[in-house]
Structure formats: C-alpha cells, structure tokens
Length: 347
Ligand SMILES: Nc1ncnc2c1ncn2[C@@H]1O[C@H](COP(=O)(O)OP(=O)(O)OP(=O)(O)O)[C@@H](O)[C@H]1O
Ligand SMILES: [Mg+2]
Image (tube, rainbow, N blue to C red; front, side, top):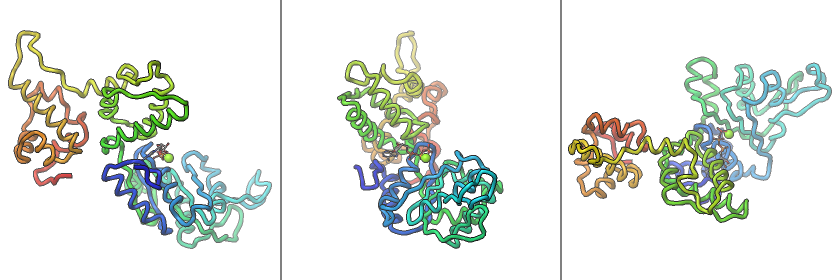
C-alpha cells in the first residue's frame, strides 16, 4: 500500500510508523528519527513535512557529518559580513532558509558540543544568532533530527547533551531494519521492479526462486541496498527474467550457508534421529516465517498445539543439526524465538 506518506509497507511496525507520521505531521513537535542506514529516515522526515501545514514551504536537509566542523556553524546559522576571513558578505544559514518550513538535521550525533548548545537555544527561544552578529533573528522552523547512532549511548559517554537529547526526541520514531520486517520484502521488490522497468522502458520479471533468496537475505544496507540492487539486476538482465544465477554471489552465498543441507543416504549411513530433527526444525522455521513469527498460527500450520511447538523449538538440536542451522543466521522470527523466555507472547 502506498500511503500519502510515500512509505511503502504493510508490516505492523511500518503501519504503526505511518500512523505516527500522520499524527505528528500536523503538529510542530520535534521528531527524532533513528534507524540503520538505508531504512528510510530521510523519506520519513520528508513525509512528515509533506503532510504538514508547512508542505509548501522549504524542506531543508542538512547532513551534519558531511560539513567540515569549522564551517558547520556558519552553514547552519549564517554569518555576518566580515565575521571571519572570507566572509565578504552577510549570508543566511540553513535555519533562515528553512524559515516557515522544516529543517532535517541528519546525523545529528555529529554536531560538536558548542553547536549542540546553540541548537538547544534555538529550540527554546525560536531565534538564531549568526556568526559575528549579536542580534538574534527569530525563525519559525520545525526541527526533525535523525541518526543511525545510539544517541543515548553518546549521552552516557558525554559527547551528546542530555537536555538536547530529550528536547529532540519529543516524538521518537525508530525505523526497523528490513530483516525485521521480511513480510514487506516481496512488496518492496515488486515496487522497485516496476519503477525500474518503467524508467528503462523494460518488462523484466523475477523468478520465484530468486524472490525466495531475496526474502532470505539479510539486507545490511536495507531499502537503499534493495533499490540499487533491483535497478542493477534490471539493467543487466539478458533474458527478461531475473533468476538465481543473476543474483550477486554474496547473496547466493549468504542464503546457501543459511539453508541446512538435505540429508541423504548417499554415503550409506545416516543418523535418522538427527536428520529428522533437522527436517522438523526446517519446517518449523518455514511455518514461523510464513506466519510472520506468530507462534499460534505457525503451530496450526504444522498441526501442532502451540505448547508442543514451543517445547520442540526449545529442545536443543544435536551437534550436526545445530551446525546446519545456526540460530543467529535464521530468519528473525525464528532466531528471536529460540532466545525467547517462556512468557513471551505471540507477536
Ligand atoms: N518504506 C519505503 N518505501 C519505499 N521506499 C523506501 C522506503 N523506505 C526507504 N525507501 C527508499 O530507500 C532509499 C533510502 O531511504 P533514505 O534515504 O530515507 O534512508 P536513510 O535512513 O536516510 O539512509 P542513510 O542512513 O543511509 O542516510 C530512498 O531512495 C527511499 O526513497
Ligand atoms: Mg539519510
């Protein structure tokens, strides 16, 4: 479903975020968006702006990590003529450019401490003072901050002001990594396929097997990685269908390592108990995946009682089965399940 926020996804975690975005957009509350790289932090910030009353005013993204520290203050707050060597004329900063609109302070954790103090003052007084001027100028700017770092940890270390941290995360929004919402993978792949096909005037499809591999993959670069991969696959496709062989070696290797080997009698010997355990685990994993981690639904698929499924999952696999299926490499719902305490409720 493509909502007016432009954020695609049907996983409950994304639904919830779409809802929060709709609700906070109409306020001027400060929002702190966190999430791994490529999870859609900037897209979420733009969505908030576009759904707000400020939509026809500027949206100004500033990457705090990309601007050299000695220029950052004047970039953000502007400077007066003659404020420093090279300041030949008065220049407005990003806050002034964003007046009546929204500023996105991306990688806000990179702001040096003196600028953190200045930002806090801006948030409290609604005014900025440009470098080399003692006249504060009123600005009306909605502030959204984002980071892929753990700001709370930076607060503990003393590199980020605690008062600013609380002031920024009036509304915290955490974007989950793609591997924590695998049920959206097919939908997103199809979206990017359609878009790239349209862009290049092509009609490339994807095979079921390739789609399954992409579903299993862990996507460390999240949605940006997916977007770029799909475009590359479309451009390089030779026979109109993206198949297993077309996927990058790292994805194929990742998924093959994850899959347990099929037990066979080819060597003349097999430990039937271990092989059966492996097969049971694989089927339980698949059921949990299909049920989006919902244990009751997975148990129904397997014709088991939920308690039986829980007990079977808790039973440690034998050494060889454990080697075949490493808990850390399993799809999220299953890995989480193994570590989950008894009382854990269905998700
Ligand atoms: N839910 C989504 N639906 C559709 N496209 C998405 C979604 N989330 C992200 N994208 C797309 O993925 C790409 C990366 O998103 P974005 O730049 O917002 O991520 P980010 O979290 O800011 O990344 P980084 O930390 O690397 O700056 C963009 O092209 C964006 O449009
Ligand atoms: Mg970004």
